[in-house]
Image 1 (cartoon, rainbow, N blue to C red):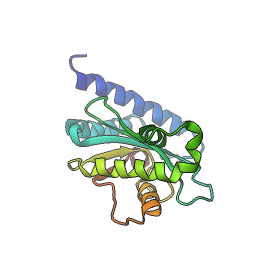
Image 2 (cartoon, rainbow, N blue to C red):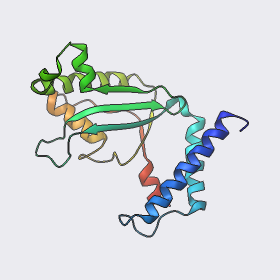
Image 3 (spheres, one colour):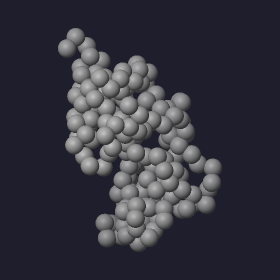
Length: 178
């Protein structure tokens, strides 16, 4: 490879093509799965994002079972990284417990406090990002996604004005688009 962008584009293309093959073999998705030409179109869109990658973030999070009776589901960890480099920023309940020197056996009775602190730190961090674009996989509704994170924070704090700023791009949705 002559440069990092060419290398990363090739990796993205491989990832997209593998995802297309997996989706095509899956019984969950209709027959309108993209072919290799369409995966090239998806790659072209991702390369456009790559060119402005300083403000593009890949995000994912973990929660308790979204079908549990606790509503909204407890957020246990959030992680994201800029598309432009490999530095990952994460927030977790366990990290919050370490900050206040809780013993592991003390964590269960302090989950709400730890989660509230974790989400407060997360929102404080993302509010300082300059026009972010978020790449995500199916984080698109109140059960699992940005709305779920915002709803959980509101549930724990009674604060209604916290939102994850920026544009959101559902990569899984991009596959269905083609």
